[in-house]
Image (cartoon, rainbow, N blue to C red; front, side):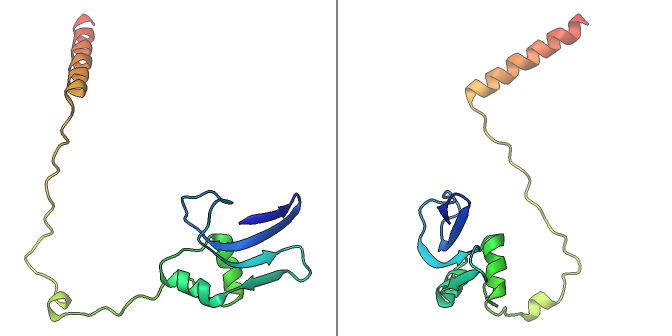
Length: 128
């Protein structure tokens, strides 16, 4: 989240819903970044960041770049997968079956509109 005055940026690292505005409501402040300080100032609560990432949060590209500089893992650890004996052997004679697509049910207004268009096209085709 950008803060600071004009041409004097200061950023808060926050956990926010991706559907919100850039400077909109957020869930938690995770740290801050001041690019104007020499050297730049980056303060991050590592435990809170890792907790959010483990819950499935995805950092933006800029936030991920800053977190990489602090050696914070960006991926959510997945549970180990169990392999069964049945899945290891591929099925020899089976083909993947796909369900037939069911056409959508159209409203009466839409079917009437399509019928009128179709009749108009047929009329134009007969005239030429």
